[in-house]
Length: 514
Ligand code: HXC
Image (cartoon, rainbow, N blue to C red; front, side, top):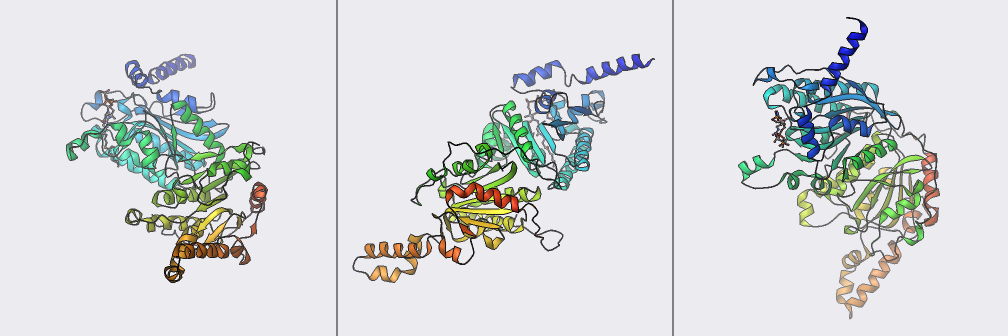
């Protein structure tokens, strides 16, 4: 055969494999409102940038008539490409081929591209659409998952790992996304659960739909497993692309700097925070007054909304924002918001992203529910994460900084590099009402008019402690700033911290309160 003939044969072979599970299965996939695996890759990556590997891999299973089955590419597509020019490794499970189920060779393809991503120190993106462990392949499927989980853990904190759930992700399969940095879900398409509705019905006698059990909303609002929620696959791909612009390729690099842009003039910093400390506002508006182009890219927007996290840029440099949200539960720290903040702080620290904290909260949430849910253990994660992080760390106290929350939200005592306060800041062991009721209890009770006396004592306490100047006098905060100086102050603080070195004692690893 001449080279030309051999090339023609190659193209024919390719064409056959590219059919995946065949036309019927592809049509079924489209009917479910889903793109096919290759379409997803093309929609996500830069045009013509995708290079596929292991196209001709075949399964080696023999039991249950598997020797008679041809599974093109063994149900998964792997390759490399670029997003806005940044290199990425990617895999996408092909549901049209045996339900995207994971057998030995399917797993080997995934682990091959994972190894490549780690070696080349580039982000890994996994598109999940699978019935889980391939039942016919028994322990080989389980082994495959184990190999994937091990690599997820090995790569954690070295390269960014993104999981996109675009179909079922059932059984043990859910643990790979759970081990990665960011999970993306799409309404009506994503389904994630350990045991499906039929098992639940058999074991517990309860009926529940897949959507209510582990749909996109459930994981975005309730479990916190998902970080980004989208209505369509296309919207989801836009979110992934945007995220890639904010993060570095690996833990030895910094995120790419962009040309600086001024915040939009419609966000006016002196008109957002109300004078009355009990009045709520949206802290995201404050963030929008300082970030370039007022472009704040929020993460886990629907989960534990009393804490806001996300990326923005200051004079072109990526910064991670952690902010109490006074609009929701007065911005308290509770179990979920602690988990949310702590994990994000560790992400930023691992990937050389400076952290800016906006603080306005009354402390940890009191109550039996929270105590029994483990607010001590969960709350400790915030202390651990901020103490451990040695990227540049800056705090702005906007209003309330009470009690344990004052310490936890990146205080000087946990080694913040800079702590600034607005003149509206109130730094105290607890709120003036609670404090006055405790320390002046006897005087209030024995007064002719206890209510008048209580008001007087609250005022007295407020004048003494509920301001930024006591903390400023002790150097716990570096400067009380005019709110209008906030962006300039932050830009400067990040700039002067560029070469920060603040090493921690050498150890194998710490024991965080997981
Ligand atoms: C082998 C599978 C499969 C699997 C689906 N298929 N899941 N083949 N192993 N796990 C095949 C089907 O037989 C079918 O093949 C094709 O994929 C499409 O599946 P359908 O059932 O027709 O699709 P649909 O109706 O859309 O239902 C999708 C589904 C359902 C909800 C995912 O297939 C399902 O419940 N699958 C099993 C899920 C599961 O329990 N997985 C194991 C979890 S245990 P044909 O040839 O007919 O087209 C696990 C342990 C891992 O994962 C532990 C690791 C630590």
